[in-house]
Length: 439
Image (cartoon, rainbow, N blue to C red; front, side, top):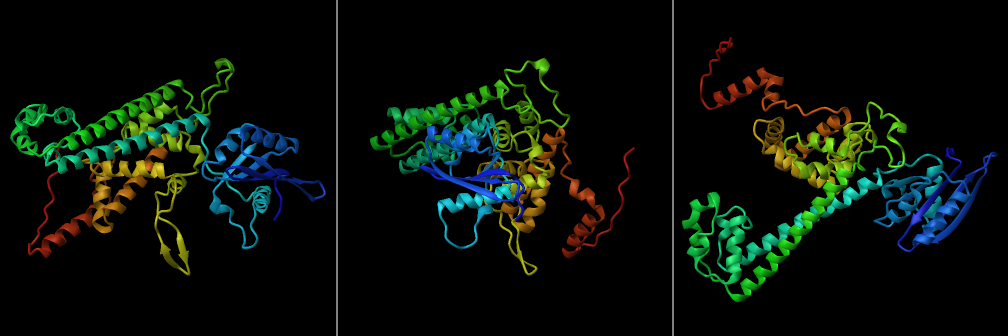
């Protein structure tokens, strides 16, 4: 393998120790090797940075090992070009395996230019990711607590979930508080209904007539207090996300605080949008609300130049079929393991877009679902939305709806033949007459 870089290093990162291998390419083509181990504490990482700087290292490669790479990356990212590599891209040939050999192999690969770094967003966007991911976990935890409350309702013969869509809506919370306080009269609790739920007071009286014990009240109180606590955390996280967006630090083209605005270089024409503007653009797409837009942009960033095309973005997210072919036969087309946080929110967006009326995404879902099933259809819709978002962010375009009849307009004659054939199969004689064109 031909060496491309003159001074590079490979790091084998573990929880307590880091092995560093530095390779220096001489003018005569010889390679000098320096190997040293470091601890994982901050003082050790600073010593590692000094060790690399002493040897004039320019490029450093390491595996994305759990979360152990993060402290190393945080120390080195400002001084070296750091490549965070997927472990699947670094498989060695069979043989003896040690931490030292792993670091040597990493250094050799990066010296020959055979490694591709993973996408690591800048620090403000990484902080945004932490917040949006934690918000997703808190939302899931709240949903689990609501299910636990409903489970206790069933055990107490309370069928509130069969009448009210949301057992923790305003009406449901009032009835739950009444139950916890010891109320046993179903009629009084049914009168706590608000809004449209008041039209179901007779059904509520039947649903709230149960057998509630002190144990049920104790468990309901515990779970409801936990729900309130999680909702408080959710509000704090959402407020912090808003403050982070307002600071403008998520804008990759924003001038640095210590650089006067007059001396800041002009942004290129294809520069990424500020986070707020990008979120507003994403919110225009059917199926994407404000929270979903923040979750998506926290994972992808607003700079689409890091992805050569929308297909690269879909491949990075693993929102596309897999590729496993041998001897001309397709063995496996399952989607791989990509960014699970982005894939989660895109799947939710796909379901939401599939339920919108008179939209291209609803038509696409119906078109694919009848042939391939609903789950594959949702994944296809999510893949399309991701491509649409890519072009909107890259070229600063607003969303344009193609319409529910887009596929019919592609080949009207084919659609006509299909429906005529279906009617003839049912025993009808079909005669078609062109409708007069409206003036």
